[in-house]
Amino acid sequence: MMPTFDFQTFTGESHQHLASRTRPPSPALLSSPDPAQQRLESSVFRSVANIREHSAHPLHVKRIRLSEDRVPIVFLDGDLEDSRVSARFLELCLPFEFLGGGLSSGLGIRILGVNGRDLQLGLVESTARLIVRGSAETDWNAEKKAYSRQLEGHGTPLWNHKELTSAERAYSTDLPSPRTRPGPRIEMESKILRRIGIFTEFSSAHLTYAYSGGADTTRFWFEFDPSVPKDHGQLVAALTDPQWGLGMRVIYEDCHCDNGGSCYTKLSSPTGDATLTLNFSEEVPRLGRTYFESIGAPRRWIDRIFPAPGSS
Image (tube, rainbow, N blue to C red; front, side, top):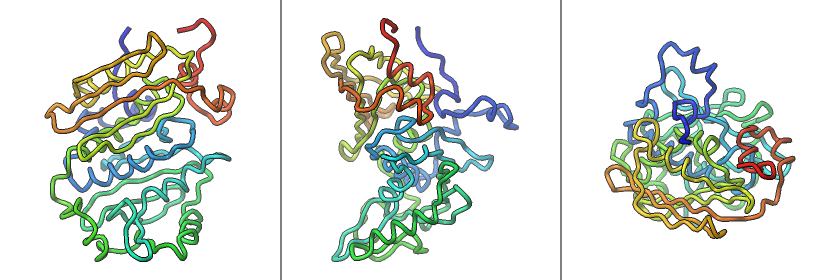
C-alpha cells in the first residue's frame, strides 16, 4: 500500500497549525526561487545532517514551518545527555576563521538576533532569512558564549560581521554574489530541508545523516536494525512524488534486502543536474526502543524502527 502524500507528511507540521492558516499550503512554499535563500537553507541542512548523534527525529529536526511572510522556521530537537543538538548546530553552521588561515563552513552566515529560543540567521548582502527554533530549555546566548570560549586560541568567530570578511571573499568560490544561481546540489538541499518531515514519516532507520558526494551530489546514510523490514520504497516514492516531493527519478538501484545485504539507490533531479544517493545498511542500534520513547520520539516512527516481533 503506497503512502498518502500531503503537505503535513513532508514538513512534519501539525494539521492543527495548518488548519489555522488563512491560506492553504501550496507546493510553491516548498521551494524558494531566491539564490541567497537557497544557500542559507542548504547550509542549515548540511549542519543538521552532519550531526552524528542519535536524536528524537531523523536529522535532529522535528518539523519545518513557514511563517506568514514565508520565513522558514526549523524546529530542532532538544539537547540530551549525550547529544547537545543546539551546541553541535552552532559548531557546524556558524563561520569562523582559524588562526593561521583557513575558514570553517557556513560562509556568509550571520546571526541577526536571538529572541527567546529563536536564533535568527541571515546571509550577508542579501535578504535571506531563516529561524532556528530550539527546544524550551535552549539558551542561544549561553550557547554562543560557550562556543566563543571554545574558539579562543583557535579561531575568530565571524557571525557578527555585517559584510563578508576579506578572508571569506578570498576563500570562497561559492559566494561570488548572493544573486548568482547556486550549484544544483545547493538548490536540491534547500528543497530537502523544506521537506524534512519525510525522513520521520517514511523512513525506518534509527540513524540518518548526509554528506557531500561532490559538487552535484548529496549522499544519505541510513542504518536499520537487522530485524526491521527495510521498506525503503515509501521513502523513494516520497522523493520522486511530482507534487509534494522533489520530482526525482530513480536512475540506478542495487538492493540486497532479501539476503540481509546493503542497498543503494541513486536518484536524479528532473533536470538531471543533481543526484541524490541513498545508502541503506544493517547495523544493530546502540540504543533501543525505551531510549527513543524517553526522549519523545514520534510513536509511529518508533514502531517502524523497533517493530513488535512478527509485525511488518
